[in-house]
Length: 427
Image: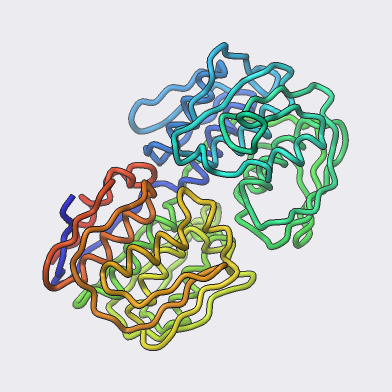
C-alpha cells in the first residue's frame, strides 16, 4: 500500500474508536454476569470480535444491532464446552484472559490463534494458574499456543508476586480468583492498567486495592450493566503525535479515555514540550475528555521506570515523536515490547531506520537521535497494527519519494478506519 506523504497540515476534530481493553472486558464481564449487559461504543475491530465470537462459542447469546451490543450473561457456571478449538485470532488479551476465565470450568478446551499469536509466551499465565489447580499446556509441552485447558471446580486461591508488569496476566488471575474458594492476593511489580478491577466493582463485585496489593474473594456474583466504552487513548495517540510533528496542524480528539493508568503518553508529550491541552468531561461517571494538540517544537527526554506500564502500547508512536525532537530520547525498562504482536523494539528500530531515522535498539528499549528528516522507502508492519499506524504517521513527514507499506491490513486489529480518518484531517 502506498502511504500518504508530505502532508501540508492536519486540521479538524476526530472522535476516536472505542477502547480496545474495555471492549474486550465488556464482553467478558457481560457474559459472566447474571442478566443483560448493554455495550455502547464497542470497538468493532478484529481483536474485539475474537473475544465476542469466543464467548458465542462458549454458549453465550450476543446480539449486535450495529449500535448496541447486548449480552445475555450466563455466569461462570453457564459457560458450555464446545467440541471445537476456539480461534483467538491475533488477540493476546483474549487468550490470556480467557485462560483465567476457563480456569474454573471442569471441561477441556483448546484455544489457538494466528501465526503471530502462536509465538507469544503464555507461561506468564500458565504457571500461576497451575498453582491454582488448573491443567494447562501449550503445543508439544511448550508455553506457546495452541493451549489446552482443563479447569477445576475446586480452584484454589493464590498469593502471587508478579514478576512482570502486565495487565493481561493480572486480569487473567483476577478472573480465576473470582471463582476460587477463598481470598487471593496479587502483588504487582508496577501498577498497570486497572480496567479489570474497575469493572469488577461496576458489575457488583468487591475488590480491595492498596497500592500494588490486590485482595479479591472468590465465589462472587456479577450482575449485568450498561457499559459506555470511552475512546481508546492508544488509538488517539497516533493522531496526537501526527498533530505535534506535522507542520500547520491542530487536531481535537473527543471522548478520549483518561484512566490514570493509561495516560502516560500525555505526561511524555508535556515533558517533551508539546502543545497539548486536556479538558476532562463533566460527567463524573466517565473518565474521558477532549485532547487538543498543535504543531510543536520538541526536546528529547528519558522515558523509563514506573511510567512504562502506563504507555507500553504507545511506545512505537512515541519513538516516532522522538525522531522529531531536538536531542536524544532514551526509552528503557520496556522489555515487554519484545513479546507484543511482534518484537516492537526491533521492528520500530528497523522500519524507522529505513526511513532515515537515527534510532538504535537496546535490550530494553530504544535510543533515538533527533531531529531528523525522513525519506521514502519500503517498510512493513510486521503484521502489527501499531507498527503499521506509526509508519503512516511517519510518512506524512516524507517530502520526496514514496513510502510503501506491506501488510497495511494489520491496522484492522484495532482501528479499521484509520487511513480514512486520517484522510479527513488533511488540509
